[in-house]
Length: 461
Image (cartoon, rainbow, N blue to C red; front, side, top):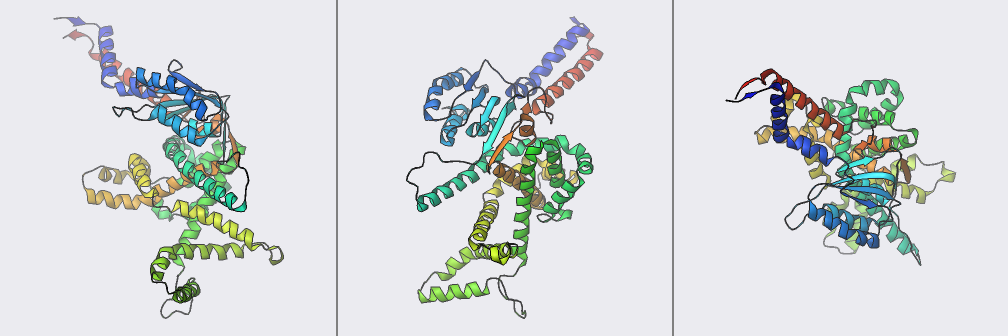
C-alpha cells in the first residue's frame, strides 16, 4: 500500500478539481480570454472585398479547432450586410453543426459597423486606450434622389435601426444583468449622490409599472441611476433619453387603455373614436365595401393610439402663431413608431426566455423554488406575475440600444462596459468582469480543495 504526502494529496486534489470542474477553468475562463495566437485582425473597412480576403484565414482557424477565435478590431466601420456575412463565417455551424465563439477586442478604433461587431462578440473586451463609436444606420452614394426615393430610403433606414437595435439588445441584455448584480449593492449610495436623477427615473418607471408590482424584483430606476453615476458626462444623455422614451411609452399606453374608445351607455362623455368611426362607416358604405368591419377591427387600436398622441402633441405645441401641424405630425409619427416597435408581439418570447435564464433577477426568493419546480401551472402563474418587470427591463435595454443608433455617440471603454457593449476593460473597468469572477471562483475552489487535501492528505490508499 502506497502512502501519500501532503504535497501529493494537494496535487491529486488539484488534478481532480481541474478534471471535474474543467468547464470552470479550461472552458469558461479560456472562452473569455484573448488568444493572440488564434486571431484574425479587422484593420480596414468591412466590405465584401475585405471579407473575401479573410475567408481563407477564418476557414483555417475553424478547421484547426472549435476553440474561440479572437478578433482584433481597428476599423472605421463598413457595410452591415458584409458584417453579417463575417459573423456567419466566424460563428455559424459547420457540417457537423458545431459553432464557434468569438472574443472581440477593440485594439484601437471600433467605429460604426465595427462597434456592432465588437458588441456581437460572445465575450467582448476593450483595451483602455481604444475608442468606440455608434451612430445611426446610413446610406452612402445615393444618386438621383427624389422625394419618393428619399421617403423609401428613410423608411428602410428606420427599419434597419430597429433591426440592429434588437440584435444589439440580445447581446447587451445579459451584460446589463451582470452589471445590475455587480452594482446592486451600491444602489442606495448612487441614489443619495444623485437624488434628483433617481426621483426623475422613479417617476418615469412609475408610468410603466405599479410600485407594488416591483417588490422583490429588478429595481430599474435604481439601476438606471447607477448607470448614470458610472458613465462619463457625455454618455449621461443616453440614460436620460432612454428613460424619457420608456416613460413616453408607459404614459401613452396606460392612457390609451383607460380612455374609452366609444361613448359608453348611460354616459354623456364621448369616446375618442366615435366621430372617426362614423366617418369611416360612411365612406366605406359609399364605396360599398364588404370588408369594412374587418379593416376597422384590424386598425382600431392603432387609430385610437395615434389619435390620442396627435391630440396630446397639439396641446403641448408652440403658441398658435408658431404652430406647425406638419412638425407636430412628424413628432407623432416618431412617437408612434417607437411605441409600435416596443409593443411588437415578437418581444414576448424573448422576454420569457430572458426572464427564465436570469430568474434570480425577476422572481422573489420565495418564488424561485416554485419556478424551478415541477408544477407547470404554478410556474406559469408566477411567470405572468413577474412578466411586467422583466418586460420593462428588456424594453429599457432595447431603448438604450435604439438610442445608440440615434445620432453619434463616442464611448470610452469604461462607458462601453457600463452600458453593456463590452464585458471587460483590459486591466479593470467600472464593473467586475465575468472572466475575473470565474478566475476568482476557480482559485477559491482550488484553495478549498487544497485545504481538504491538506487535512486528509496523509495516510494510505
